[in-house]
Length: 208
View 1 (cartoon, rainbow, N blue to C red):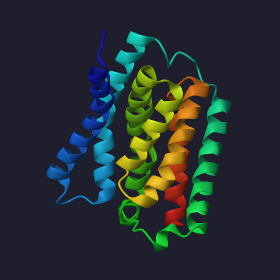
View 2 (cartoon, helix red, strand yellow; view 1 turned 30 degrees about the horizontal axis):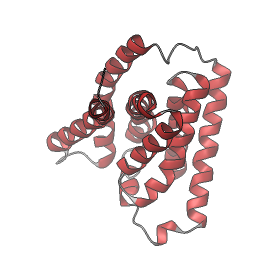
View 3 (cartoon, helix red, strand yellow; view 1 turned 30 degrees about the vertical axis):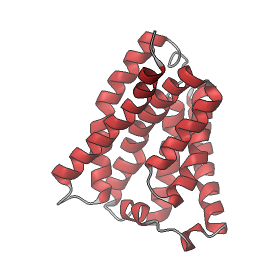
């Protein structure tokens, strides 16, 4: 039987995978790629091992990924993602958080080539992050601490991982929504589509 220490290590492992790949990408490509391209490269490199680990756990635990999600459900999820993104952005603007905290990380991400933004922030990053944070980290926490605590703790990790206060305030409630969608639709496709929709609308509005 796995010890508590072993379970904690299993929760942290997916985050370390993402972290070390991102650091390797920065070391190799950082001198001649901007933040937008680095995000796309990192996510693209994270996806293959994350998919492999995720599918291995589906076979081992048989606790998710079995339900088929209908197209109309994915469309509804995408609409929810757009609405959530805009509602959270509006709320942060209303309370004026940009007056007190820097958002340089996000601004740098949206400063690159539009096609790289779409590919990286809009497609690759949502797939990689949902596999890491909902598909692996959240599910492992859920087996260890139950659904409620897993939703809260994995969402805190997701927020902290984004690295600045503005992004933390945006990503924490979004992560709770992503966990909820994962539970409701029974497939990682749900949170991936929601995350993609939220990011793509942000890219589109930023570049208008």
